[in-house]
Image (cartoon, rainbow, N blue to C red; front, top):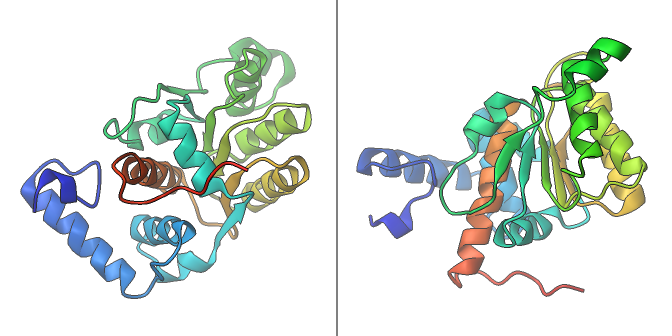
Amino acid sequence: MTDDDYADLGATTQDAMDIAETSMDIVRSFVPDETLEDRIRQKAVHSTGSPDFQHLIRFNNDPVVAGARAVLDERPIVTDITMVKSGITNRGHDCPVRKAIGNGAELAAETGMTRTASSVLELDREGAYDGAIAVVGNAPTGAMALADCIEDGTRPAVVVATPVGFVKAADSRKRVRNVAEEYGVPAITNVGTRGGSGLGAAIVNELVHVARDAREGDIDLPADE
């Protein structure tokens, strides 16, 4: 196996490449491998270790193509928390990557809203989400805040929202889907209580993989309409 054949842009050693390729071969044995959306489903299954997760992913407005084009255009990647940022590969793209958490402390203190929600709103005031790859992997309140921003006119290139948990997580993802559909924003989400930072990062990494394959001529992205 050469460096050009690795299945995971995070793999740097031969053993890691072999493990990644074998893992994806197993995933492809029970997840279809026909469309770009299938690649996201495969990565979701791979990152969660659950074959059933392929049925929980939802797509709005051709987000895989939109996300890959955003990677090729070197658009910023904005995550909600540090863990998601840390999980995104630094190989195969030149997108600047930043996190929301750590911004908006004054807003959180003034309003009592969560740090993540206030951070998202603060970055949105700076215009950080327009044209960006917006990723909320952990915090339902961050996803809700991002949905509010979209409703108020913000237009990310694509949204990846996978907050995890039993309180507001499913509702936050549903809200993202609703505003994405209403305002034509590409989005990848999931249903149910599961999700999390690892899943969000894995989905973004697959968008990077798709962009890399398009750059190298291995796949053709549909033309812009």
